[in-house]
Length: 118
Image (cartoon, rainbow, N blue to C red; front, side):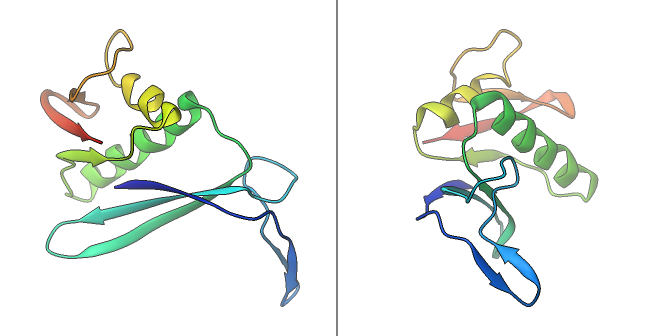
């Protein structure tokens, strides 16, 4: 699952670290993307604070996760996200010619596919 949480931009200094910075900006984060895996359990596997992100960068992150899960023997059979335009753009890039679909070829094994749920 992929979910975006909107945050109030806020920086804090704790334990010698600045908290609230976006990974892709020198400004405070305004959104956080949360990546969750579900099988017999549900776990947050990554939290990515961002100021602003586009579909291509989100696609690269989602693809990286799918490929890394495959290496550790987690087979991704579906990606769940809302129908936000950035999420649609990111998912459409899994097609050979970018198009929105509900079934995409698996990036690590083109003989398999995975599904997109909104």
